[in-house]
Length: 134
Image (cartoon, rainbow, N blue to C red; front, side, top):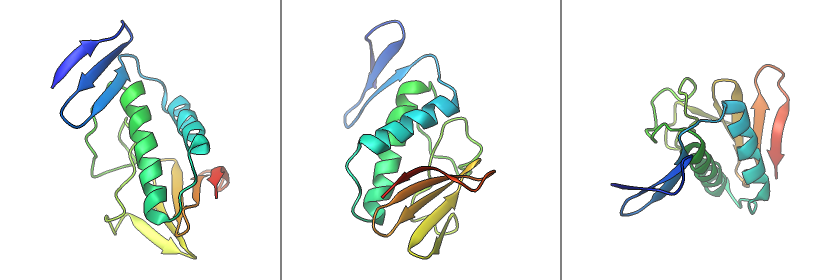
């Protein structure tokens, strides 16, 4: 792995298969979550569950790579890490299914992805959707 500095606030990590820009100064989770909402809104809609999961995972990884100094290391406990992650769909004990939706509880939110690619993020305190894309 090699490092090349682009400016004082960002550096570029490059490897054989990836390129991860990130900032030395992390943004608070709330601001990173707002960036995720913007990225998901701007992206083309997903057609199915796998595409929906891939869209959320890809955009979240890009944001976390850019706005935290924490390396990607998917934890076993998804809700308590400083870096935000979503569990893989293959982790059956994390995901539940009901009414065409696959749901996973995260620390303060619930992520729901439908079989048709719809994405919702629910605030667990209020039970209200804070993001929805169908």
